[in-house]
Length: 375
Image 1 (spheres, rainbow, N blue to C red):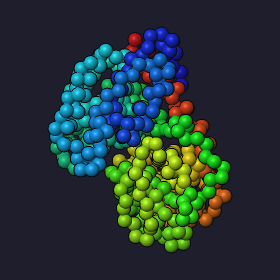
Image 2 (cartoon, one colour):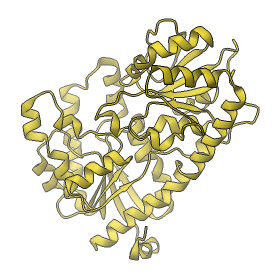
Image 3 (tube, helix red, strand yellow):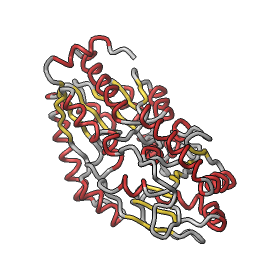
Image 4 (tube, one colour):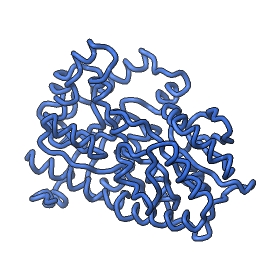
């Protein structure tokens, strides 16, 4: 990719970015798609102002109660509107997904008029509108994000499914940038790592996520039970509530940014089951990249970005039915050398493709080019 004269901006005046994220650092999508890039971009000469729509406190309340609350949301949207009214003081607006969810498209486009904006997607949130249960919502909002994409200077999608939607919507420039980890937070796994990783010597199969996504584990409940009968293990759930899976011992661990790497590293295999539906096709496989960075082999449904990340037979297995899941997990739990070989292959793949050290310069170049084109 050529960024024509964008490189000239690196040593000129700083580029001022208004980053409109959906969440503060507690929200995984915002943390990975925006927040982790900030130190790198600041070193590259960008001046970045970040304004989350939803604070960490609000997100915690949603996890606890299942909703945000009208008063809190009203205040959040009022703050977002104030920031949008100031957006022309910046060279570029970098938006995670959309600036004003559920507002009329013309309002958001009007507030963004006069400044180039970049949209960043790691989920198929357009299906919140075009596949909504209400026919009125579908009629009014079906093309909301398509219109936003069409008016953007650039759309960045976390996988090909998201990028294709942007191209079909008429976006003039679309790029794929995967969701990645920072190698500084994931040091090279020790060569002595084994599949035990726990005082009771039972290997751990790990899943990391949130209370809103832990239900995907029910999709493979039958497979996990069958595997446990032949190869005893403990299912470690990080960040999701403890769920009942017959015949499967489960340990639930609270997620924190400080401990997630250590808690993954002590496991044998990382898993990512998904339903094959339009929403899940927008998933970018971030948890697989976390597992691989920790030197774990992976087993994942062949949905969304997963088939692009998992080279079946090299760094893990793609599983599309119960038999696939059973066979893959039994092979890995029964063969430590295979685990070690696939784990090492996965780590190399992360270092070559799925890390901030690789994508940081790409994102910086894309943002510079947007500003250069605008000027």
